[in-house]
Image (spheres, rainbow, N blue to C red):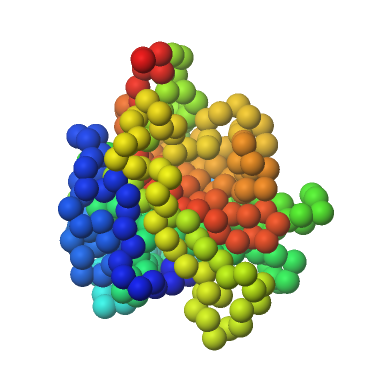
Length: 376
């Protein structure tokens, strides 16, 4: 994962000092650099031992059956060799998140379904993690938000947005990159959803670069001893605005623009190609009222959903990849979490990329609240 480049002095998040009751908890110091109150609040909310479930979705939003089973007394067996096995989409997961001198480190493991000794894994206690490596699939270790003064897109509730500064271009071999984002439950500090969206290059669609979402991993995690039940079959609530109501952003979020050097190839000696995060001042300002501020999310509007991929995911989550409805030159990679499906508050993470160059343009992370759209 690429982290943002440092700047002289701490970056400020506009509007962080005064937030309303529906905003995430926040300190009076807006800087997100290591050692600041805001960074400490984030690490306290994010770190710990998390247990959960993980489901993989294809580009149509269909849950993928886990390709391997563990048969008691036999070992790993490919799903293709078990034609009569029940479909199972929910990995049992464990994610250990620790704060280090170099940022925050995530170590995640998945336990595959077991046949012949189901009690060992279904309890989601400690048993399934003590049966040896044959039951486990270790995900790649992820380090996020590295370096003093570089931690721009975090919230005190444990939410973050992280990923590459560039989407793949014609020069890339595989043409696929991953964007990692975490959206916290607005009502429960010990519950969150992590979403990994894999974006691929589709340059044949136009003379400019076009992208599409190849797959999406969704991790429902709780910081408790009890693992949440499987959630792949949960209802998938709509993300459009309910009749007569609208989602508007609250104050206190993180909103950053990425400035790029004028030179197209500044050289490898410049970290991150010379790009630099700066806090945006046009949104989340103290003078902006909720009635004047639109939703963070692009997904949900008919115009956007007609030109992009909207995956309605279980657990109140969604993932969107597609053109910005008001600017075709911008490609948006976004996700959100509305716990319970009927919540009046949701957490949204959104990254905007330039379609032609693949460069990251803006990162917005914060909360929306559902209000009466007809109010004055």
